[in-house]
Every structure is written in C-alpha cells, then in structure tokens.
Amino acid sequence: MPFKLTSETMARRAAGFIAPCDVVAVDSGLPSQIPGVTPPELGAWFLHNDGMLNSLPLSLADAAAITRGGYVNLAVVDAAQVDAAGSFAGTVSAANPDSHPPANSVDLAAGSGRVIAMLSHTDDQGRPNIVPDLSSPADGLRCVRAIITDIAVIEVDGGGLTLAEVAPGWTTDDVSAQTGADLSISPALREMDFAPPAGVPPNKVYADGPSAIADVPDGATVFIDGFGGPGGMAHYLLISLRDRGSRDLTIVSNTAGIARVVSFGTPPGRTAIDHSVLIENSQVAKAIASFPVSPSVSRPSEFELAYRRGEVDLELVPQGTLAERLRAGGAGIHAFYTPTGAGTLIAEGKESRNIDGRDYTLEYGLRADFAIIRAHKADTNGNLVYRGTSRNFNAVMAPAAQTTVVEVDEIVEPGQLDPEEIVTPGVFVQRIVRRPDGFTGYE
Image 1: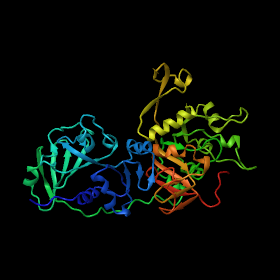
Image 2: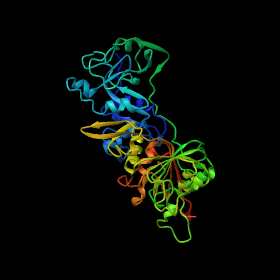
Image 3: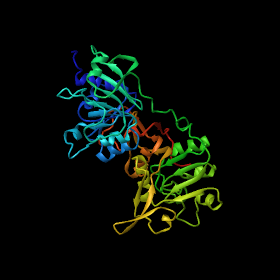
Image 4: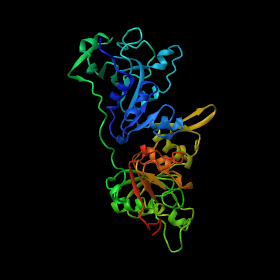
C-alpha cells in the first residue's frame, strides 16, 4: 500500500486553494499548519480560533464578527467525518457526541464563502471517514465544497462526491475502497500538486482622492464619519466625492452636516468641510442620521434647508442605535431588539416585542456600498490607527461597507505599526489615500 500524506503535506495542498489577499479561517488541528506553509507574499489573512488575525490580537467577539460578516473567503475545518452531501462533524463533536461541543466549527460553517474539510481518509480502525451519513452530530450542513485527506482530494457538489486528485502512488480503486460513500471519478483526475500558491495582493494605496472614489455610482449608500465638529472626518475624500458628482446618494452619518454651522474649532474666516458640500451640490437624496439639524434655529444647516424644501428624505436614528446598527451590519447580524425609543415616535411602524416585561423595538443592521473614513495612520495592508476621539464612528463603519476608503496622514510599511495600537484590521479596508500636504478640513 502506498504511503499516506503527512499532515504538513496535506496543509501544503490546502494552501493551494488560497488566492492573494484571501481571509482564511483555520480550525485547530490539521488546518493550523496551513499558515506556516503559505508564502507571505500572497498577502493572505489567517484568522485563528483564539482570535489572532495574522499578528493582530482580536477579541473573540470581533473574530466571530469577521466570520459572520462575510469576510472569510475560505474556512478550513478539522473534520472527523464528512457525508455525501457535504455535511461534516468536527473532531471535538465526534469525540464527545453526547455533549456535542461544537467549538468554532459551527461559526466557520455558517459564515464562510467556501468550506474545505481536512481529515484522515480512515479512522484508527480502518473505517471510512467519508460516509453516506454522519454518525455524530453535524457541525455544518451541506457546506463542504472540497475534502482533503491523506490520500485524495474530493470535490462536493449537488450531485455527490467526485474524486478529483489522488496522492502519489494511489489509484482510483485504492481510494474508492477506503471511501464509505459513493464516489464518481472526475474526467480531469490528476495527481495531487503541492506547489505553493502564487500571486500578489492588490495594491490598496491610491494616488489621490478622485481615483479612490471614481466608481461611486449614482444611488449609492455611503457611510460618512464624523461626530459634531470636523474631527475624524475624511474632508479630502468628501471634496473628491463632491467633485465626482455622484447623485441620489443615501448618506449614513451621525450628523448630516452641522460642523459648518456650529463652527467647533473652526479658525476665524474659514468654513468647515462637512456633508454640506454634497447637499449644496444636490447629490444627496436621503440621510440616515442621529443629529441632522443645527442646534441653532437661526443658523440652519444645508440639510435642514433642503429637507424643508422637500428635496431630501430623512431617517432619524438615536445615536447609540445608529452605532449598533452599523456594528450589526458589519458583524453579519441582520436585526436586533433594543429598548431605545420603544413607545416613542422612533418606534412607529416598527416591529416590537415585550421581553421580560420590557418593550423592545426591532432595528436592522446597516450596510453600505462605500464608507469614506478618516484615520491617523495606515500600513499598506490597510491596518488603521486612529488619533484620540477622532475614532468615533470610523471603526464601526469600516466593517459594514462593501468598499471602505480611508484618508490618512501617514502610510507605512507592514510591521511598522504596533499591533496593540491597531483598531481596524486591514481586512475591512480596500483603499487608502494619503491626505495631501497642506490640505486642511476648512475652506
């Protein structure tokens, strides 16, 4: 009988499924060896069970949010069994079927773009681990798309199991004899290849603001950071978006442009750059905000004036609820109940429930096509460091956008930022722009 593959060789084959800049969630056990055999120049992000994202320490809640939020391109699970439909039982569950402790496997199965299972083809008694039906509780149902064992690679689709690759020295008859489920043979069957994956990640650094937001279409939803004054706002990108001229935008922000009228910290004779530059240019159709109007009746904001004229729509959201809706959107939580606003105008037309004697209102997570945010520093991988309270909504907006564009004061090479200072991991950032020398947040 030919030799079976070592765990390291299996990890090398699994690494071949990784594309440049992929976010890869690796289970404990066999998959934990994959990062060590993957070329660093591929730019892959490895999310571990303990919350580490490459060298960045994350809370387990934040790590789970990356998975649920749809950022994991590939999850590799340590399986005890896989059935003909692609359901799997993790090694922890299989070892403890009465208590069924699923550990991290259920998270990986539910939130990943593609799931690969790694396991020995047979158990210690020579019994198949690829079976018609699982003998242990399932951690993931019909989610596995490929199986890597110590003798083969098997593809899984709606039609069942297909033998795609065999380990050196193994024949299709050998593999079929050790497989408990029906197995078809791919017409493109080949010997397993252990060459490292190739490619380079895309360059996230853009030459200027206009090029970074050149594809913002009409009708887009855009997150815009900022609190009350100009701090933490991507002024250069705001001007770039104004000059781009995209129309019918829905903007989501704490305010809808009050820095200009309240003049927090604005030098004499200058005007703060804020959302008003878009509203003046008739680019905004709707705002979702918690503080959309000026605190001064005598100095209405541009949004307030446009709203009075019936030119823009408004969805008013309490500030804490806005932050939580943003967080939920980025964490893959579609909706949640909150007591905030229950029984008030905020709750009108929304689903409500009484839970443990208290009224709650259903709110939905927020997602956007683009987020334009502000940070102090970024490395070229997109990891961000903020300065003081200018962090405000930036960190919670970045994960909830399809494309996050960040304006920074300084761009450094990977490894030059202290991991303990990084607040937003680069998995959430697609584009980086350095604010031009001499540019300020005022006109």
